[in-house]
Image (cartoon, rainbow, N blue to C red):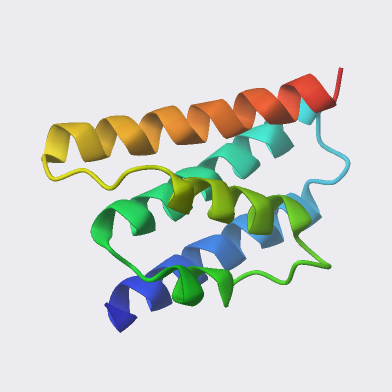
Length: 105
């Protein structure tokens, strides 16, 4: 479990670094990064990573969006079949990305 959280922390830090470096990049690129981060959070949810471990990765002051969608992800069901888990991860990442685009219109 701790290995999963550590891998997720590294992946999220890379995404955040890319987002910071890409602040001058178009809106679609940053919304894509937000969606990818959300998908990782949902993947952690589906793997059974405790919410407290996921929340420890995000500072609510620096990353309020990530903090919020982590809470939303953990309000969703945890599935037992691989197909349903993968579907939940994909759909959640896509939904968060959609919300990002809507806010930027």
